[in-house]
Length: 226
Ligand code: SAH
Ligand code: DHB
Ligand code: MG
Image 1 (cartoon, rainbow, N blue to C red):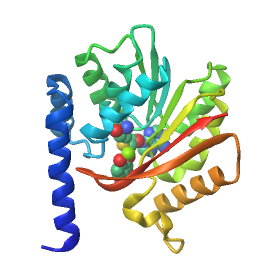
Image 2 (image 1 turned 135 degrees about the vertical axis):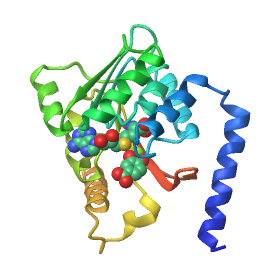
Image 3 (image 1 turned 60 degrees about the horizontal axis):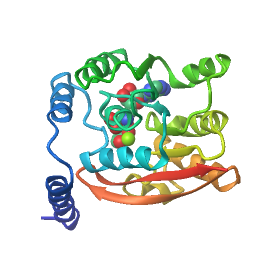
């Protein structure tokens, strides 16, 4: 077994161990993952332990208004929407109508349809529409869609923020490829430009945390708008 495979096998087992101890079995979330698999969705949702982390951050922040960019089957959506309470509101943007359809059904299964709105289309365009609607600032923004557009999503996220808004972006480490300045992968390029933009401004203070687990080696950016 190669070193990398051995390490990944341990990350997987440790994620299971943490899940068994700290994340009570959740019939709805397991049915959501099963529905996603049956519908042929790619298994690129956040892991159970990461979903729980998102839920905790929403609780710690006391966030009531959330913007999510990249819905997939609504797995991360459900983790976050559960923590915003009855009066909370979560808007999630998704390009693929099939993903959005599966997510809509999953969100109904979770009983969260009153607080979650999925908008279908290219997030860049949907964000422009939200601006035209003069949408109120969000308490928390989760960026998790197509990585080449991360620079655009960052611009809009700052626009839809107020002091204290929490910004989280998934997949900013990508197996360490983020430091490869020769990379021709447009996703890596998108993340690197996103990091350069963050580095060049002072409106948001944050960090990136490398993670390993059942979804491999990756990481989150987490910041707070001043
Ligand atoms: N947040 C989800 C995973 C999202 S995967 C979870 O953790 O459960 C990324 C999603 O972004 C995919 O469903 C993909 O269809 C969507 N996406 C890709 N490009 C997009 C775009 N330009 N606008 C909106 N969504 C996009
Ligand atoms: C990809 C996207 C994600 O949001 C993720 O968590 C993992 C992989 C991707 O597009 O490859
Ligand atoms: Mg992701």
